[in-house]
Image 1 (tube, rainbow, N blue to C red):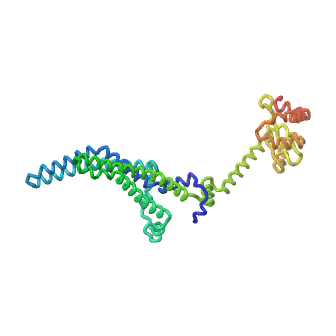
Image 2: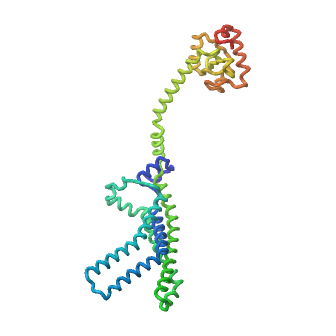
Image 3: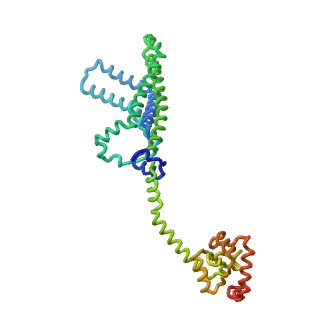
Length: 357
């Protein structure tokens, strides 16, 4: 499917599905920059301790210079070298691992996608591999790598050139002073490169985020299909609504026999009203309808000996302004009161049958 057809923004469900598949916005430059800076700061902070460890190791090697190199001495020296190596490298490896974990958590959070580990045939397909090699993402990655190396080299070159006078003076310095001076120069270079990589990482993450959002965009058809799956088939929803209307209609018709009067127009509208003086604040609409529904309401009213009162304007107004189960508005009080008064005068037995209202 062409990318041009994917014009709709991804839904939350689409984003969640993509995340489950491991499709998230992530930049390796963030990891690289954070690992470099954290490792550099650790080495700078631990430089005296690392120097002491290296000096101690060197002293042990030279202390054995005048001894016979038997198996015991060699084993001892090897063991000491391994311990020193582990003590020096373990903090560096640990801080690099922690920095990488923090970078991943900051970008994608906790994410476990075992499906990405499973072998896929398209990964060994030469055509798919060629597409990935010459894709837009691959071109961007190549350009980014070239620019990164070039700018990092330029930063190192300009820093060394600005401190070029340092090198002749190293001859007159003591070894510790010379090492310290070179260390400071190296620190400046690494720090500047780290800051550059951090800025590059921010720009790259923004690019990866936009690419990710673009890759999970949806077509109009996909949006409709997802809505149908999430909300249900429109045909089934229509049937459910039809059943609900049928049940509501039956319930409404069952209330018509309780009405005091049915206001009609005389064929199109029918509104059944009921009023209990000690219970209702105003007359209540029990049922209403037009055309066929109105005919059914009138038929039920006739079967239950309920008065049909013909008042077309009032019938239309009641139908349009009052919902079933609602009370009539104040501006219709007088008109409805006249209707009820007529009914009570016409049928005095209502007052006895319906509780002296």
